[in-house]
Amino acid sequence: MKSAIYPGSFDPITNGHLDVIERGARIFDKIIVAVLINVEKKGLFDIEERVELIKKATQGIGNVEIISFEGLLIDLLKQKETNIILKGLRTVMDFEYELQMALMNNKLDKEVETLFMATATETSFVSSSAVKQVAKFGGSIEGLVPSNIVDDIERKINRDDRGVVNGQTRN
Image 1 (cartoon, helix red, strand yellow):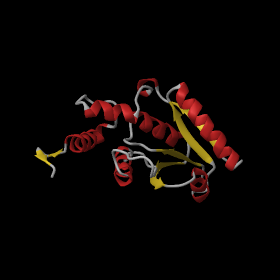
Image 2 (cartoon, one colour; image 1 turned 60 degrees about the horizontal axis):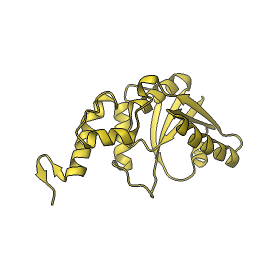
Image 3 (cartoon, one colour; image 1 turned 90 degrees about the vertical axis):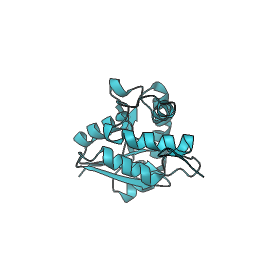
Image 4 (cartoon, helix red, strand yellow; image 1 turned 60 degrees about the vertical axis):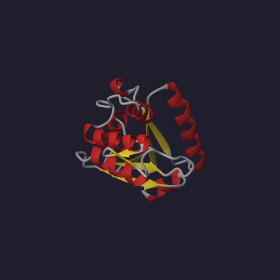
């Protein structure tokens, strides 16, 4: 069975991420979506929330596993008995950064291969940061993220940014 790990922060998952997962799931027997725990970075969603959002967004794809991880990606690859990393690319800037990561992972383990997948044209401009920015200022994120998690994202942003939950100010 050939599996690949698709690592990232996914804060939150976007339609671009989902596109890579769906296309990867057609190529590999299994896609392991690995949500990075970065203790140095405070995300909008905590790790458990991100994992749940991804599970919700990918519920119709049978060969996807969603996990969280901390540490070196090559250690996770060994644990999951694969040597393939799948990465989506939107821009040349993405390529430069991801190439550096691919070379580092290959330096740490010569068996590791990173496969780059160009994002679909219709999602090439979508990033998690842009989604959060649009939602924060009341813009529509429909079409940017999976439709079944739009409400989850808007609720979280409204609660975190305005200190308001269901019309009630937090104490």
